[in-house]
Image 1 (tube, rainbow, N blue to C red):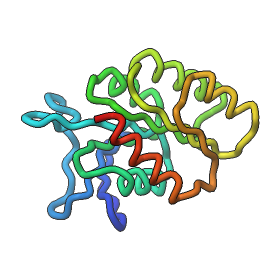
Image 2 (tube, helix red, strand yellow; image 1 turned 90 degrees about the horizontal axis):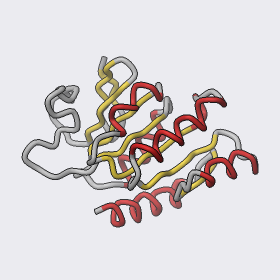
Image 3 (cartoon, one colour; image 1 turned 135 degrees about the horizontal axis):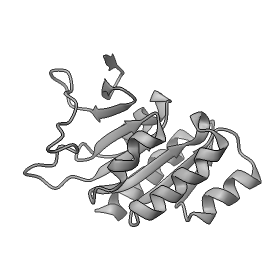
Length: 163
């Protein structure tokens, strides 16, 4: 199932999607042999845990085309992706996550993507939610509705710090 957006193209494979901003034919889901599409070139990857396509669109706008963006609607589906050394950024949108899954996902990110820069987007801000996210050393915390310009600046600085 292919969903067209203004900038990125999403190719859906169950609850995981690979995003590309290049024009041309529909995006193919990454192969098992090279899931991040990194053969022959060194590319960073961003794991995005969200069901909100607008979050993916902002990320795609905030980073260069050299990044592979993988979207996971279900946190369990992204677990193996976090083990990949090319994962340099992780974005967690907690809107679709059950309360018990939020801490589990943050823990998995810290265990398996040790050097990744992490942004946490809270559906509803509360001091408790922010405290939990920051206790896992996330580098950027925000809540919805997101400040678009600030988020783009943060993504741009993440990109420079990760390369």
